Length: 88
Image (cartoon, rainbow, N blue to C red; front, side, top):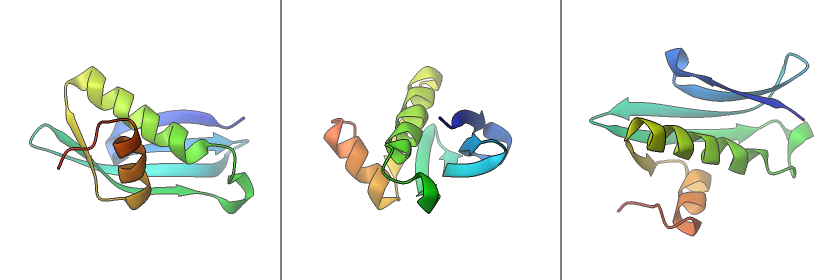
């Protein structure tokens, strides 16, 4: 199973598997808001729930830092909406 790491210096959550990038989520921070701008999973790793894991990690980090969360990324927006966390 890929390992998840938060890399705040590049505003990303990265999933790696044996030094290969399995997926990533990129975000921007501004005005106490974490905005998810892109979520991507390597095709070899799709269908394992990894994109959801990335969004859930971003949501947990935003909560831990007291940030609001938004998503320009369609996939992340759908996950946040299902979780009742989508802000208009």
